[in-house]
Structures are given as C-alpha cells and as structure tokens.
Length: 283
Image (cartoon, rainbow, N blue to C red):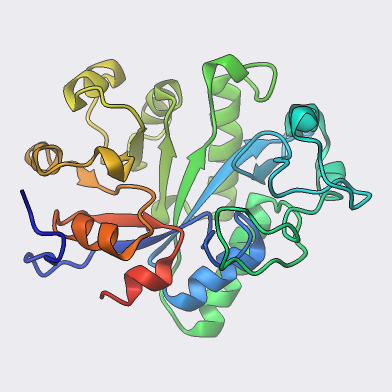
C-alpha cells in the first residue's frame, strides 16, 4: 500500500490538465471555462469535440444537447427523454448556437458559476485562448482534444470514423496547433486511423474498464504516447507497467484533495481535473 499523503519524489510535478476547461468552477466546454482555466495557470486545456450537420467541429461532450446543462432556444429546459432528439450531427452550427449551455448549473458541481454560454466551435476556443495567453504573457497553450466517438453512433450522431478524424485533423492543421496537441479517444478505431495519418501526433488511449493494459494495447495494435485511465482504476502496478513501457500516465478525472494526493504519489505525467485550482494549490 502507499500513503495518500505522499507527493512525487521524482521532482516532476505533473502537468495540470483542465477538464472541459474547469468544469467544477465554470460551465463545461464553454469559453468562460477555458478562460478561467488559463487564468488559473493550467498547462493544458482538455476539451471534447463532435461534428455538426454542416461539418463544423463543435466543442461538446455529447453529440446532443444534454438535458442536465442545456436549454432550448426558447429558454425552456430540455426534457431528459428528448435530449437525443437535439442531435448536433443533424443540426447546422447556426442552430446549435441558439441553445444555452451555461445558465443551468451542473447538479454535480455546486461551486460552478453559471453564465450564459453557447457550445463554441473549436476554432473559436483556440483563437480566444491564443489571444488570452498573449495577454497573460504566458507560454503557448497545450491542447488535449478528445474526439467523441462510439461505433454505435456511426451515421447517427457522428460521421464514419475516417471522416470524423479528417475533419478534426484539418481543423488542428488550419489552427496551427498540431505540435501542441494530444489527441484523446476511447474509440481505438480513431487512434488507429490517426496514427496512420499523422504518425508524429501524440495519441492518448482513454480507458474506463478493468481489462488488463496488455489487452488494450494488443487491441490497439501499437503503443500510444499516453494512456488516460479513470483514476479509480489506477494502482501502483498499473503505474509501474506504464512506466516500464515508456507510456505517459494522465489519469482522469481527479477532483478531491485526498484523491489528488493519492494520484500524485504515483508520479503521473499529468492529471486531468475539474478543479485545477485544487491541484495547483499542491504544486
């Protein structure tokens, strides 16, 4: 067993990755959340991307309007049973932008400060953060871009994997942030295609089940630069195995101070958190 109060002895404090910006403090995946994360001093901004009907790369965790955090253009709440009917892949971005996803506080984050916000385009987020970074006099922003993809969603909530990846890669290339971007995905198909398309792009395999690491890597077919497990799956054995394979460890989503200290004891490369302020306080 290891003590949850220990801090890394390697001298390396992990990179602080602001999950969906800083979901614990501002509405997730919105410009206010990304701006606050940058002001707090995160090393990397983590965000999710999906695709609209007019093939725009939209920052959103779900490919639909979540009833928990979004409101209809009329301002009325979304009926939970009807959330999937508000399918982003079936809506042009101009329509998506009419919904508000910032005024309703997420029920799981009581410290979150609601503010009016639409789902932004990836290019809008990057332009805003690059400008803010210059104003703050800080170094270039790093981006952790998760492509939301599931085989069951093909053709319904997303384009086929090759088309989905091509749209995201074209956007990253146009924005000139590829050298500062890590591409994340649970869907191994996306990562396999990305490795073939851009061999130099760092890829992160996200894991949310208890299958052995070796099984995941065998199914993936190559060794990714980064593995991102649910932090509740993290053990000293898994951390050591990743180190032995020279894979960077960036677990998600670590929020409570006790959990942050426990994870810090395993010397991860980075930590993804909804509360970057809490992690930064331990630096």
